[in-house]
Amino acid sequence: MQTYVIQGGKPLSGEVPVRGAKNEILKLLPACVLIPGPVHLTNVPWIQGVRVMSELITALGGSARADEAKHELHVDGSGINTTTLPDELVTKERATSLFAGAMLARFGEVTLHHPGGDAIGERPLDLLLDGLKTLGAKVEQDDRVYKLKGKLRGARFVFRKVSWTVTDNLMIAATLAEGTTELINAALEPEVVALAEFLNAHGAKITGAGTPTIRIDGVKALKTNGGPLRVMPDRFEAGTFVCAAAATNSDVTITGCRPDDMEVFLKVMEQIGVPFERTADTLHVKKHKGLRATEVVTHEYPGLSTDYQAPITVLLTQAKGLSLVHETIFEGRLFYTDKLKQMGANIIMADPHRVIVNGPSPLRGRKIISPDLRAGMALLIAGLVAEGQTTIGNIYQIERGYEGVHERLRALGAHIERVDSEKF
Ligand code: EPU
Image (cartoon, rainbow, N blue to C red; front, side, top):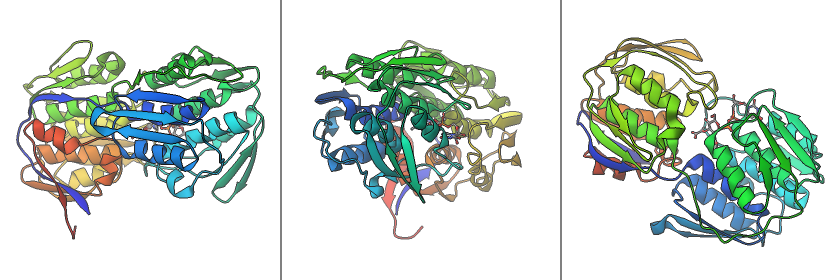
């Protein structure tokens, strides 16, 4: 098993670059199914999801050629000639569900297994299926396999609950539908706007992305535009590095990020007492003189994203006083706090959605298994803070979302090794 072995308790210093946004590229790749020719993407992060989706496009008859050194990907979905997605790839990532909207839009049918992804609570597809049915698809379900069929027509769909990926999925699906689609109570994330811009750059007619009402006037076909298209910076990765710097009381500059997309996260950092300076594309975190407890409530964008919750919770173990962390989006996203307790944090779980953190607590190195992507990365930050050695297993979960994170942390002076260990 691959593990990270960390000798903690050492401050970080220097500059760390942010890679392209996981939750944008994982939407752009399925959208390439609709584009009748090559797409050139730059600032592509080398993470598992990108590999899985590239393999999926290839398995379906398209092509995806990577230039890993340059962080570039050349995708061509025009050769896709089969509408059944291979189970072993679909079940590796949640975002493979995006192929449902794209394949339906192009071929009028698709068969796929329930997608995989993080173990952060039940992750149903009901909203997606409701949305696709509203656009005219017929759905047959056999255990965990869905067969979707139908020529899509524009329609009005109201989200009873905001869903980021379903907003993306329906936007892609409606691009080639006959007539106009309106998505009401749509997700507002900057990556949703980026996906709409990507589709529009290839001939789609989408307005209102970034507002609660998105209008999609269906077009007969998209066209190629040659690109290149640059993936936006990953705001969660940037936030993770801010928390790592603050939790270890370090002076670190995060480069290639977009602080304007991180307003509420940065407000919470101010509240906790993390000193930082920002430019349009950097965040300079400075040493602090003590951190303050606060109340943290996750919310859909532009609120504080659930993806920042775990790194902030680790930071709060180093803040003075009682903090309340309220996770409103996923019911399984606080269980990793048990592992923080094993490292010495003083945390009480009030219920599956709320924990109380009593800080500051010195943390001690431990052997721990990474439960999911964000929690795993938070435990890695705890390992950087902790005295002694921390070994993190199941780092595959961390590497699903953070490319070469141990190398980038090492460049900041962290003592972290990626080790292949027989036993854990
Ligand atoms: N939901 C339903 N039915 C559905 C879809 C979602 O009830 O059909 C529920 C979910 O269970 C959840 C809520 O709606 O309670 C919001 O889920 P959403 O659909 O917005 O989440 P998602 O699109 O599956 C994306 C990100 C997640 C991020 C969440 C919330 C991607 C690929 N994933 O997931 O990112 O945590 O939005 O912001 O964009 C991560 O990067 O580690 C990650 C998990």
